[in-house]
Amino acid sequence: MTSTPVALAAEPTRIEPKPLKGKERREARRERDESQGGTENGTFEFVLGSVAAVITGVVIGRGAWELTRIDELKRDCANGGSDLDCGTANEGRGNKIAAGLSFGFAVPMAFATAFLFARGARTRRDHKAWHAEHPEVSLRPSVSRRGGGLALQLRF
Image 1 (tube, rainbow, N blue to C red):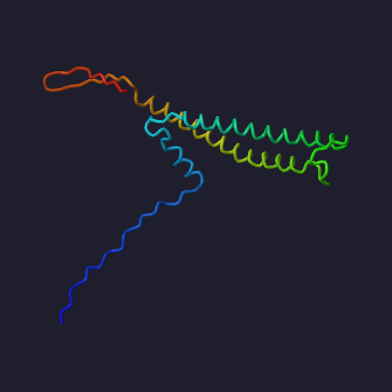
Image 2 (cartoon, rainbow, N blue to C red):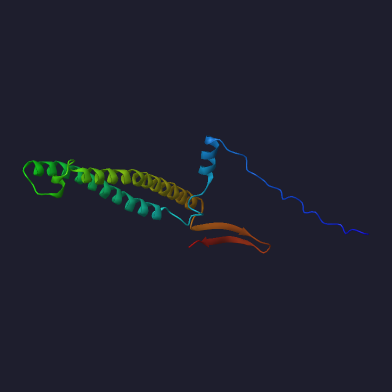
């Protein structure tokens, strides 16, 4: 009885990058071009960060408004107001919950706004650096067998 040789598949080689420490990680991140070769200029991040900042301001304002409503509600209840909250043992409980939720949502929104603005600033910096290294109009000397000259390069 003859056996046919079975081709054993070689184990694939797994290459893992060297784990970086904090300072090395930051240096590697700084070397990355956030503008993706000068195509991105950070406008999207700045617009999105501005929208997030406005929403954060509105949510904080709403929370502050709810806190001021608590004092008004207590005054109205003390003067014999007929508000639904005046009949409960804990006047203004709903307003306190609404204010807490508003401020609770404002905190992560503020962090998101800060991260978006920071990324926009990095992208804008890399965009300007890339365009400084790659001018739109350049004039280069050229030499051939028959002569020489200047080559004008325009980048759109």
